[in-house]
Image (cartoon, rainbow, N blue to C red; front, side):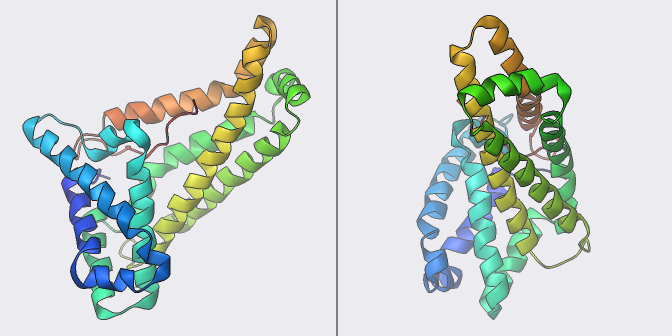
Length: 257
C-alpha cells in the first residue's frame, strides 16, 4: 500500500479539529482531551509540509517524524480513536467525517493496510518464539538471576505480540470495502502495547549486559539479536518510505535507549 503523505494526513487532522466535526468531539469527554494533541501534531505537520515543499526530494511524514519522537504513531492512534467513536455514535456529520478520512487514508479499503504490518508481526513473533529456544537459555538464566521479573516481561511480550497477530488477522478477514475503522484502531492499540512490552523486555536485558563481564554479556546479547534486526529492518523500510514508493513501509517505535 502507498504510504499516506504528510499532506493527506494533515487534511484528515484539519477535518477532525475544525467546524462541526470538532464540535462533536468537544461534546464527548472521551474525545475532547485528544483535540489539543491532534492540533499540536497538525502544527508540527504543517512545518514538515513546508520543508517538503522546499525539498522536492523530501521524505514523507512516516519517514521523518519516526526518528523524532514517534508522533506519527501517536497521531494515527488518536485519529482512529476519534473515528472509531464517531463510527459508533453515527450522527450524519460524524459518519461523513469517517468516510472522508477513510477515503483519504485507505482508498483501497481498510484490509489493504494489512500488507504494511504482515512482515512486522512475523518478525515480532519470530523474536518472541526464539526466546523459547535452547540457544538463548544460558543468556536468559544470566538475566533472570539479576532481574527475576524478566520472565514476566518475556511472557507479557509474547502475549502482546500474539494479540497483535490476532488483530491483524481480524483486519485481513474484513471485506476490502468495509466502512469500519474501529478494527484499525484496535490494531494500533495492540501494536502499541506489543512494542511497549518488547521494549520493557529489551531494557531488562540491556541493564544486565552493562554490568556483566564480556562472556556473560555476549550470551545476554543473543537474546536481543532478533529485536535489533527487527528494528533495523523497520527503520530501513521507513527510510525508503517516500511518497507512494514503498509498499512495505511500517510505522515503528524507536528502539529502547
